[in-house]
Amino acid sequence: MPRVNRREIIADGEIQVFHVVNRCVRRTHLCGKDRQSKKDYSHRREWIRQRLEFLAGVFAVDILGFAVMSNHLHVVVRTRPDVVTPWSDEDVARRWWNLFPKRKNKDKSPAEPTKEELERINNSTNGMKEKRRRLSNLSWFMKCLCEPIAKDANREDKVRGHFWESRYKAQPLLDEMAIAACMAYVDLNPIRAGIAEAPETSDFTGAQARIQDRQEAQSNRTAEVQAENTEHGPRAGWLTPVELAPKQKKAREKQTTRRASNRGCLFMSLDQYLQLLDWTGRQLRRDKPGTISGDLKPIMERLDCTVESWLDLVRNFRRRFRTEAGRPEALAGVSTLRRNCRTAGYKS
Image (cartoon, rainbow, N blue to C red; front, side):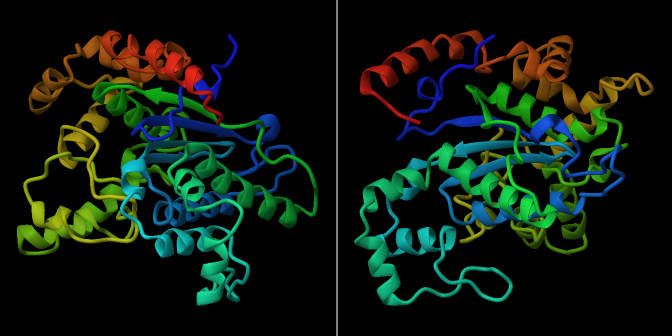
């Protein structure tokens, strides 16, 4: 089945959620242990995680979840063009400098730009309007994620050529059920691959980072401090919060430069999502048939989804939805979006 052109599914100026997948060339273990050469490239998974965290604080793109596997990566993102609008020209220029610095520190981090360097960016051929567009654009986000990783890997291997198999694959998520199912699908990837036993031991996933922050936060006495440390923890503070409407609003409203916004992504709390994730993982493993927890029934009701259809959705997420993912009524609006994009002559 041919891939849908990106100009038909990506619309600048609109908030959209995508499941993004990118594989290493020839699908060899370029981020893990290569069975043939016996070389271990596992340290590159940390490169990707660090790059994701860096980009979360630069782009107007929310990162809802991720999983870095041995030969591919999954990222769930939400573009936020609305976040770019209030940024000043200086803020945009500084972010652009951080992406493409002309000078770097010894640790390869962007050096502090001078006033003249920022003004040079402001007066460049591609003006502020174009840079604002790019800072909330999925294609530019993936370019700034994948290109540096490929260059560093080739430099380490002393080779030239492709590191990634092809351009990334993007799958629009059109409603909350699709987002919840996709996040669970991504977080359960290490378990499905047989390299982890539980979400808390699934390395390089958003679920593990959230669990670790939550566990550390429980050592605090007050609920306010617990909520703040869970929302803005050292490991997952750059990820989008789970709950759309948290009880502790003060913790959510805390200013941060580690992510594009403090807006949540699901209609359930972090604890409810982790319960749902754990239960789903048990159902999808042959050696752990499990049972439906009574606490999870309200969640399934909110999903407006039966147990059987939920499990089928997570198990066969990529197979069932080759392009967009969502309920029938959400999918019905896609044809209109594609038609509008073609009319506007959008280019990815």
